[in-house]
Image 1 (cartoon, rainbow, N blue to C red):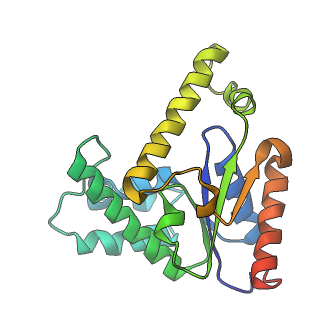
Image 2 (image 1 turned 90 degrees about the horizontal axis):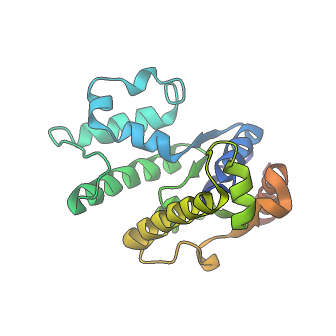
Image 3 (image 1 turned 180 degrees about the horizontal axis):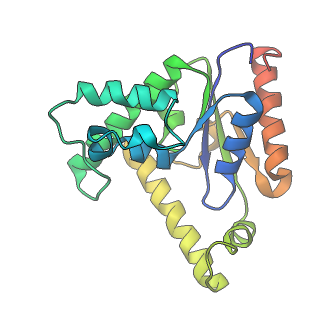
Length: 212
């Protein structure tokens, strides 16, 4: 990559957005950071006892180094785990936002979830992507993982999407699915995982002038 570009990916549950992010990062030779990784470095016990440093997904990446610096800045505070508590959730969001902004300053990368498109919305080097698909397609995709009747599976997917929409609305004040908050919106049902990756790469080259 000739220019530093950060790609943020928001995705409907079961759409394959995480796979798109990981494959894009692999093809661009950059790191992909997802919600689970942010949760790991947001657990004060993990950071205090250095557990994250030994996680193969995180050790040696900028995420660990950035999280360590941010954690040191909160020394003496007990960083909360995700919960329904208003103040704990607010503190957790602010902490993760600090990490996301520091990562964006440090390196080109793909960031999946965590309202990253909103957190980095004022940067010129960021491309925001929304990955979606029909509920039927998504149900078929995750039926291999979740063994439940189709009706229950669809209900589960809708509940996960509501959670993401509520989370996004609470911290950004915006509608999670509103296309105006993303540079590009892609359907894995129509393009497939590889097709979405190619479309994102085309968009980056179009916007920044053949930088890949």
